[in-house]
Image (cartoon, rainbow, N blue to C red; front, side):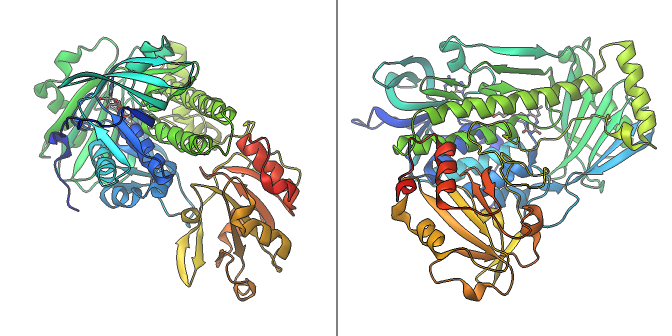
Length: 563
Ligand SMILES: Cc1cc2nc3c(=O)[nH]c(=O)nc-3n(C[C@H](O)[C@H](O)[C@H](O)COP(=O)(O)OP(=O)(O)OC[C@H]3O[C@@H](n4cnc5c(N)ncnc54)[C@H](O)[C@@H]3O)c2cc1C
């Protein structure tokens, strides 16, 4: 499929046919990147979903550009990442400059054997355009444009009603569950009497997308106090279609209306790139940033995700990336509860885990912003001393902070985890995201993560012997569990011939997984539908597995425990 001009796409308002249902199992409010990802994930779990959006356009001007490996892994699970990666600019390397010298450079993904790079850069309108097209092609998803939610009420009988204004007037819908992905200003948050608490930074940033022909490397370049923009910072990123993103820190006193004028912007760009470069400004805007979140992401039967729940500064690219991780966390829990496989209490852990993640993101984002924009003379002196030392000293490099870039949050403190009873390398704790790696299936090299996700997986890593037949028979018999669990054997080369027909297996042909999962002489991992590790053992029995599954789902009992 070719690319269209997503920025000027006008999406159709469709009047509701007479007699269309007024009650839906789930309604998502907001068709931004988070709302559309939520809709796709619900559909992949077999649920029909209605999405309401007050607008009829996609992102205009590029807001987000950096999408992280973890987000791409989630979008792979939803079947939309490949197109984004093909269009996007992949990068792993960042360079830091202080004044006119390079201080240091870093590689965010130095090891091979991962399907996706540390980051791609892709304009938010492409990202939204691809998500939208995927939603449009899905018969279980209905996006209703120009449908503004103006009222919400929760009832004792488990229904939520929404008042929706459309070009044809207002009507009421009801749902069992509502997911509010209605952005940073979140009208739903206000309607439910909730506030976001945090900090607004007293600084302004000029953000410019320019089109130009240049053969700079596809790396992230960040300058502290450069000669072409003294006392401030500058960030440069490449995007598809020869578009480059430049962020100029301006200071709090800058006048936004003046700064966006092209006659003011062009000299700044020329000072950075040189006079002889031919540039065309695509988009320009001045921003201030906030780090804040709601106290509780669950409000009865309404869940808040993405910017509606939390906001961060763009240093570190944690906005949309963490929003996609929200929906990754929420959907499987909602799915199990909607199917009656898990109790309502499982949904409380959405708040527990994602509020923890939001705090981690806000902490990282605040620290970056403080380092980039020192608030006092002393902080500025400290910052500059660190930058000088970082050229030669490793300890100082660890203090340099131009935006610690988005990574998946490890739910190490989650109440859904079964703590280790056996010894494993601490680098991969319970609660971490399952690492990827190349494996062989049916003679083809595939990615391990493509076998995980959407449901619980028991990964049995075999050493020289296959596990007890009784354990396998139990695990692969789909009738034996109320909660669907998939079992995959991971075997070293040469053992595949011993695997009985009907048992799913992959070959760890280069022992990449054996190393990443610290398998040594075999191990068993219980991996959640969102690919986080729930439990693991060096050797496991059915009772232990069932207990861990019960804990990870808050289920009263898992039927197979009593078999
Ligand atoms: C300059 C800039 C650079 C950024 N860079 C990055 C980056 O590199 N990486 C990154 O991950 N993030 C980045 N971000 C953040 C990112 O853009 C946001 O986090 C992301 O758009 C949030 O997505 P969302 O779906 O939660 O909300 P939004 O994209 O805001 O979508 C909310 C939707 O809800 C709809 N809506 C609102 N009210 C109603 C209502 N009452 N009824 C119905 N619909 C409603 C809106 O029309 C909108 O479509 C950046 C942001 C900025 C400003």
